[in-house]
Image (tube, rainbow, N blue to C red; front, side):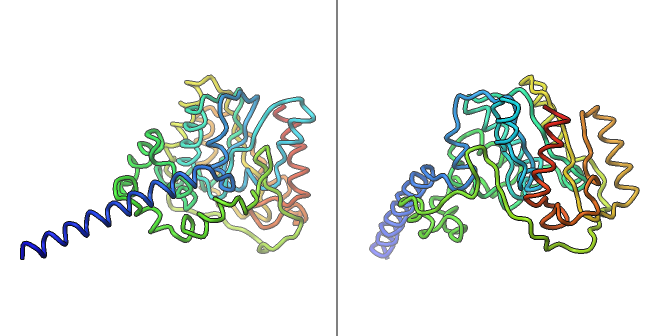
Length: 297
C-alpha cells in the first residue's frame, strides 16, 4: 500500500511538473504573438495619443483612424474589438495606461444594448486575455468579476486545455512560426467589404433597463486621467427601437451629462452603407469617418 501511494505521489509530481512547464512555454510563446489585438496592444508602450476610438465591432468595422490621422495631423488608434462590452473596454483602458500610455480624447461607442447589459458581464473575447493573467492588473480585474479566473491562474495549464480551440498546439505553432497575418492594420482598423447580408429590419427590445455601472467606472477613469470623453452611437440599418428603451437611454445620457452624439438613424434606410443591421460596410465606414471628422476633430 505504501509503495502504491508513493508511486501515485511521484506520478502526481511528474504530471504537475509537465503542466507547469507547458503552461510556462505556451504563455511565453503566446506573448510574442501579434494576431490577437490583446497581443498587439501589449507591445504598445510609452506613447501619447491625441485620441482613441473604443467599443465593440460597431466601433471597429470600417471606421478609418488612418484617415483621421492623415487629414487632421493627429496620432490615434482604434482600440475596439469584436463583442467588446463596457467591462472589457474598462480593462483595455486600464491596461493601456498601465503600459505607460496616455491619450487626450476618447471616442466611446455606446448603444441601446451595451448601456443596459449586466455590469461585470464579459463576452467571449475576454478569453483573449488568458495568456496575460500573470499580470496583476488583468487578473484582479477579471477575478473580481468571475471566480473562474482564479482557476485559470492557479491550476497549471488548465486555461490552455479548456480553450485549446483558441490557444492550443496549432495556434502555438502558428504563433511560433509567425504564419498568421493580423486582420487589423497599424492603427488598429478592421476593414470588410460592401456586401449586405443582414435582415430587412432589426428590433431592439429589453426588459432590463438598469444602467451598466461599468459605464460609471469608465467615466471615472477618464476624469481621473484627464481624458476628454466623447460618446457616440454608431449607425443602424432599419432599426426598430421601442420607445421605453429610447426614453430610458436618453434619460441616462442626460443624467450622466455625457457628451454624446447619436448617429443611430443617419443611414437607417440605405443598405449600401451596411454589411448587416448593426455593422457599417466599407462605403458606410468611409462616410461615417467623414462624419466623425466633421463633428469631433
